[in-house]
Length: 431
Ligand SMILES: Cc1ncc(COP(=O)(O)O)c(C=O)c1O
Image 1 (cartoon, helix red, strand yellow):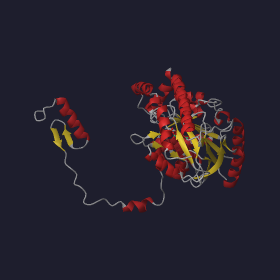
Image 2 (cartoon, rainbow, N blue to C red; image 1 turned 135 degrees about the vertical axis):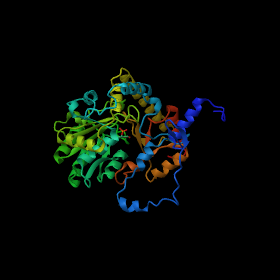
Image 3 (tube, rainbow, N blue to C red; image 1 turned 180 degrees about the vertical axis):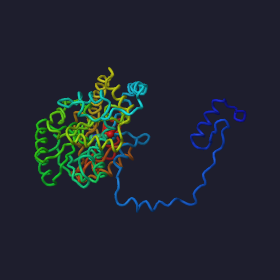
Image 4 (spheres, helix red, strand yellow; image 1 turned 180 degrees about the horizontal axis):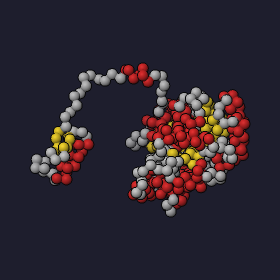
């Protein structure tokens, strides 16, 4: 204190920091001492042996790294899969988390399957014939995809997916040893006629698809195709994994009810993600399943991770049952609608030749580039011009049908930023 002329509080803080960094050790009743330094290894470590031990399997996280890395300073994000912090219910979340953490049993093992009131809330929200006992609370949509696919599709088997589809499911499938097989989709979603053919050709027993505001295209499966998709899957004796990742983010023509709400025989395994309408770290979702597959999925989750953290389950329950929740959803939907309009207006102004989807919900639209455009090179050029966009190619399980860009309107700071992002994109895309 004398040497540096600082207060005792500052010295205590400095010592805590040094202790946390391992540079100082404290011995109770004796004092604080400079820690012994480990002897540095001579020369760089040799990890070569690991290549042999690990073998030829690999996990490709590149798409996910790209999705989860914040944009560089000064760049506009027309990318990203989560709401900008200004659209997240941050105050309500802090209050909900504080209430959840104060509960006496907050850190105990939760009831297996999930906190009962939260299971009941999910069942009511998803609707139809879904009962609380059909709901398994899980650790977010991505983890649910891993759990569900691991539970129902053996390594080496085919997995039918819409083409294009969420690149995160392609990564999960490949990491689980599955072979994603494309099924064509158009602006009304999956094409049931070609789905039947794909089942027949591959002998697949699982179809993954998104019913509403599909990532990346923004398409919603048309009401008249729903029964047909179910019938085709029934004829093939296959499961449908329904990833309803953006069900709370509809702002236009409402999407029809999810397939699981009208599924009498446990064919549909439904995943309801909650991060998209709240914040990325509220990593809680629900998996709805019935019959033996439900037991298989529960066992897979239990073996892999025991259960989702109870404080997060309780936080979500506090949040969605608070009086501010419907208000938050209304505000987010209105903001996304207005942002979609701002983005499409900016595209019409600066890139009038670019055709694109006009989603009724979610946060992505899908833009068709002129034939022959290298979408990945374009995305790199765009980044140099100060705007982040997603090239379409990684969303295709096999060869892309054409070059595309995914443009997101949920992750930018404001409508003015969306407009500026398009202006920058137009400096590298000339159509
Ligand atoms: C279609 C789709 N499914 C699932 C997820 C995973 O969401 P989370 O794990 O945050 O619930 C995402 C996230 O980008 C997504 O876009």
